[in-house]
Image 1 (cartoon, rainbow, N blue to C red):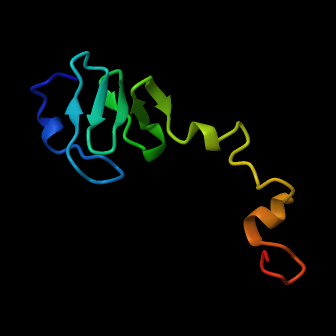
Image 2: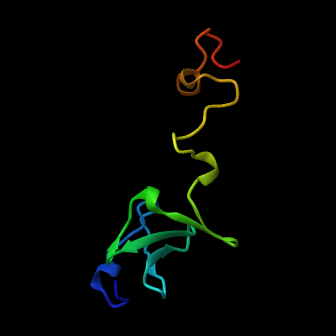
Length: 95
């Protein structure tokens, strides 16, 4: 993707719908408001919400990296997978 590409004028962040900036190395688009970096692969911007990488002082990190595992989010400690989604089955509503 080139800095003068007309597509840059209409591309928007999938999360806040604001404008994106092409980074100098031309391999990513930046949303400075949310501090998210979206990769450009073979000239094609990857603008899925899950493609965004959070930019931190320590460098880029995957969005919600601490909350995700290979199998998805973990249930709370001691909860069964069903309770994590729908609450306890004893009718106490999580009390």
